[in-house]
Length: 551
Image (cartoon, rainbow, N blue to C red; front, side, top):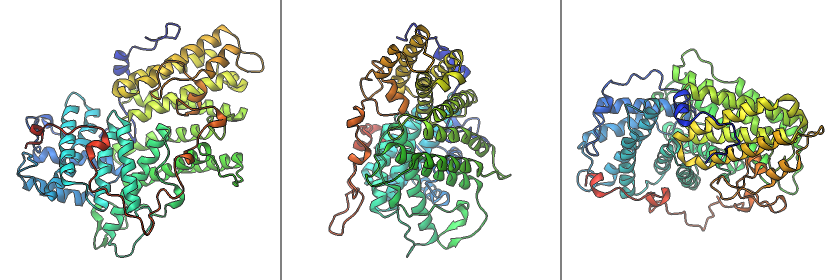
């Protein structure tokens, strides 16, 4: 039940009509024109490859999304796999017609690309494309991969990351986090984090680089959003970014063009942002070495300039399509999110200065308005990330208001109530699309109700300090790791800390969980066995029934 004392937001039914879907990078499938009968072309009567025309639409949708977000697969190489798949029987039978390892791997890549594309299309027009069909392709693809065993080499990393891309868009970020972790460990075993060029043709080298940087990008984004440790330190990385030319010009014989691809430029810009995101987390969240002499204020000033420079260097080519332009317009919220994380309370900066608190409150306000606009324009797609950012902006804003006289002067109580109401409405609408974060939405509503009730009932003193009752609200422990709506700890929420954190004196750091040589492969050490990796165990699902595989 929602607290009676809290301003009731728009009910979720009207929220879904007023607002809607969207984020990362985000945007609609702009220039792609799908056949009117595409849903009928995607055969759902059995696990069967769709018509070739429908398949081409799915492939186009996938690479439009991937080229600007996570350019994992080389398009020309994938289209060769697609041709191989359509030379086999269209009805998938993993024990008879598709029984050898090569056939199963081909079927995995083709069906998983279809599944990711279908999720993107489903977010554009849920009435025409069913999530159930995407799940069906996905589960058949996993069965094929499990029967074939994870490939050796870079292809194994690609396979895991493709599975993670599906989970990235679907309502379970923990699946994506586990699979990305496995992919990153395998990438490190293979040395993809190091810039090794000897004996590699240009296509093989670019394939290694894009696999690593997609793994890095997903690891940074998921770990930061879920308050989990990163899988690899930045100091051990020497791999260069992949090529910025279009895939058709990247061949084993060489790079056939020097003309840059504007979608690839956007992808590389996102990789640069993930490096910024990584440094923010390291400097503000991890326990510094005892011998380190760091002037946090100077670093913040330098990082502010770096974030602003990143945003001002966005590619602005005249040949960008509507989808790419939509992605670039969403970088405004990415820019604000980076600045918000720079100034918000954190373990290494638990009490920001008065000016930092005011700056953070202004940025949080911008974030809330930006997400409201993007949601209404249906330009979000990764809801777990959007929910996390809206939740963090709202809770940090409330914490700043009860602690900072400057924030109280900059934001009236009426404005605060309006912003909190907007956050709650957004969270209700987003959770409709991502039910796994219902607990986080409820935790926000409980916190907002208590804070607003206390602020209105007990006036804040001239010094701007919280009254005893508000302080007590901020000190209550939040129960459960799943953001239970009981006993919300506003201090933990405002800093983005995990929900069950201990007291400051005993608060653990990510350094407590990772040894310095966790990722070092010693000369006498056997590489971990990924060939026998059980994909179903990794993502926490059971295999689909035998009849669903066509066997």
